[in-house]
Image (cartoon, rainbow, N blue to C red):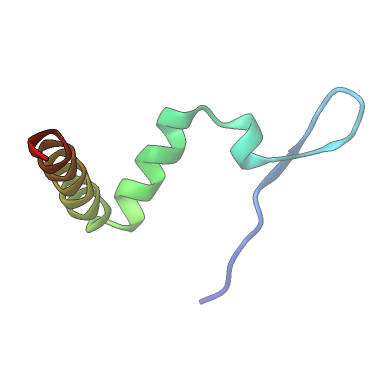
Length: 59
């Protein structure tokens, strides 16, 4: 399975990467679609970050 570069051109003909042309919601949707475990990892990271904040306040 190969990768396909998705790109666009602006009005002047300059190349624009899809990450620059697509809104963050669209990019997040693609990540969720092709990497379903991403949500689990993000939740774990969020919980770990909150726990670190609690520990820092307790010290």
